[in-house]
Length: 420
Image 1 (tube, one colour):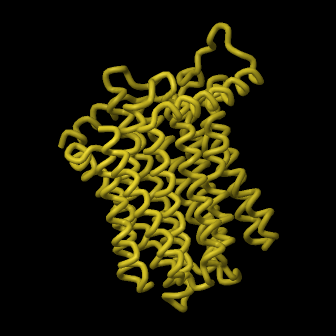
Image 2 (tube, one colour):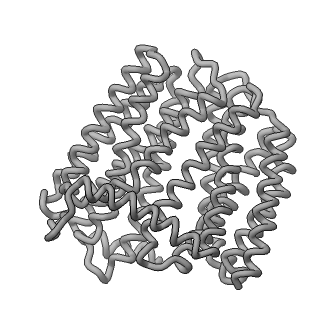
Image 3 (cartoon, one colour):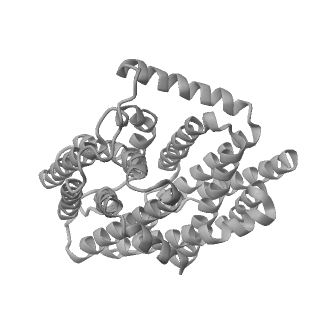
């Protein structure tokens, strides 16, 4: 297979192997930590989980990515990236261990969330640094290949870490702290692996005339404002981002609903509910993979707007048909369908932004995209907290989401005619 052959070529590069190992261990630890946080909030026997608690957990997991992300690059261009991987992962190992102790001590929820928030805040620096360091270990000829394979391998590592966390949690009752410590151990391994890379190897090089830190941060904020102004002049990209934001909102609301159904409606035992949640995550992941295979073909025939409109229209029909019975099998099928629809639409939206936005503004617009994407998910959790009953069965929520999908489909259909 060409992909296997290409990966073999890259793996002959010793520094690429070491940087990839740091990525795999870091993202596997992220997967473990995220599942540990979710299961503690939702499936701890001593907790009476509510949609509001789930919304809080999602805010802890996602908001740091959005709020810190645009400014992380300013600091990464000043700090040695090898040291970011070393100290960042050491700090996350310490914070994850502290979070495990807080679970055992049964402290107030706000203190637990502060500790968990600190772990996820550091994560943005590590992930951005991994991408920024890649050109330092791969030549220009192989850089595109490395850019496609490394994030994919990292995503698979995060999935594997999450699966390992689910397995530990199902094997041993009341093991949330143990799962947290497993994540801390993987963070520690990532930190020590970073020591295999020379300190100066990954850069950055000190640029002449580099702005002072305060000026650089102010320039970043100004640049984001410029990105917003540029986006208002690129209606195709703005429309795709708006549509993707609404679809992400829908996906987030349904995610909270499934969490509550797994916890209270479908099973009496907490371990059975956790197993069903793991299956739902796997089905959604399979939908994401199917989208990666199907979307290039579909966009080639329908165009990005046409494919997004079809995805939203299909969701408007299938989501209530599969969701309103509130039974496991249709919901699991819906998890696959919505994973495909959401990821397929995102790939198409990315294409529209990449082609419609000027190169000079592309990074800033994608930073805004990241903010919208995650804030929509957290906002959806907040709305779901208001609408969902304790067992997760809410016909009004399902109908509201279907209407939003239908509105997106109609808007994209009109927009597709306008921009083609």
